[in-house]
Length: 364
Image (cartoon, rainbow, N blue to C red):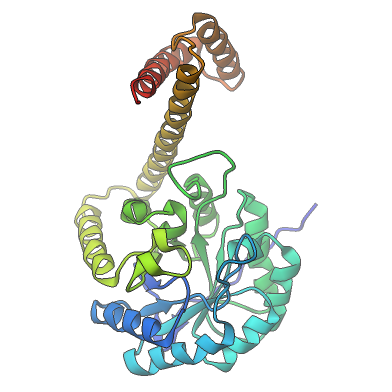
């Protein structure tokens, strides 16, 4: 049985700047050229953004995709610091990355989701960072493994790293979804409840996977009390060399963030008991995940409708519905839900699923 370990942390400071909520870190998924990096940084800095991010080494799912410019891009980030005064942040995945980042005075590093999932890699990064006093953020692992995420913090902390922060970037799912990565909000909220001293920021770019959803996710995160956001921003997203669908231009980012933060600030004055508000945020996160699950279910129902049309099958199949309802009633009963509740809930869900299948049937 693993011994309990108490994380020892300090407030985050980078490049002479204190990371106070709401922290906004923005910049391109990948540093592609000096011109692209500098123009993006200038536009973000003019809008009040103090922390700049850019991918130098890009861990791609499959070979052949753009994997970053490597150390050639680090002087560009040094130029960003000198010209704009912004602090700069990059992802590191091994000791070589760490040594090169420190050589070029990078202010903040983060451990990516794939690296977090590999304790050997995390240990290597932690040992390379020993004795270094800069903020180190840890993204949640690609799979929803709470202890794996916590273990990365423990490894870093055991090497004397005290400036720790968490990044919630969502969790991979094999099934189709409206999001690139499922938010599963209750996991970061649980982490924050156990370790309130560690700032938790949200990555709406990697959760959404598409720019039209980025600010919806960002607004949800700030409403749930997250300490900030890390968002991908590119001067020409449609021609970006990586993750072009989820990046937004700097002017849109600044305008949308101002609106979101004003709305969050206006609602902050109406808060009641902090403990009650935290419980309400947990309810809100559960409700949001529930809605996303329902949307994903209806997407599958629409595909079933297309299949039935192609094979001349009727949309409504009473035997299948009876079997499904009985199964769900038994499953619900086993986890403490009443048959009456399950019957009512799935009656509404079934009716909407039939509507979605009928809609598919009418699509030529």
